Image 1 (tube, helix red, strand yellow):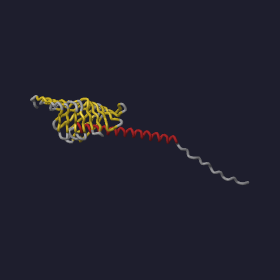
Image 2: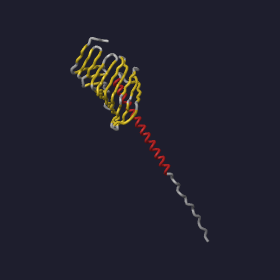
Image 3: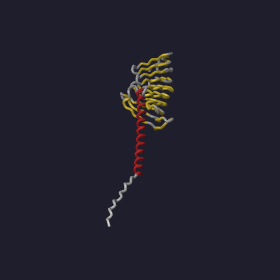
Image 4: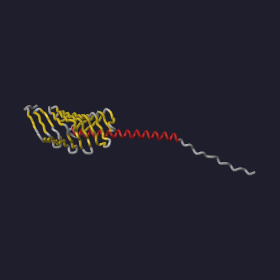
Length: 221
């Protein structure tokens, strides 16, 4: 009787824990989602910071030296990212402090370098004294280096001067402010008006055109 050949044991393939793999994949996806959400928030905050730095450069006499941005909360308005009650504080190159606030800043979803601001107000200290500037709304376009202000513009100083107009266009690159609507002003020495104005900040030159008029009161401070 012939001996039977030994039978090789059957080796079973190791079981793969698909549930563990699925759990890891889900955790990775959640981490990635959180990372993307966080980065979008950081990038959006950076864009808003740049926009307010542009405003600071416009309102403040010299380029801002220190900047601090705070806000009440982030949200969305008609699917556009919005910052509610943003506040920018800082000092210019000579250490003069300033504060710029807005009721809201809404970033254009299709163009992150463009934003609309409502109820803008700036308080600043200059070598000539305190200045307060207000605008109903503004549109900042960093790519075009432009700032469009509308809804009424008012400027007040502690030396008794006031200026009022309805709108203005700012060339941020050329540092020029243009107004195509009437401007009125009042100071210790009288009142003035003009149909249009052009202000070159680099040259420190204000040019009035149209029906320019001035009434002198004979008073001075």
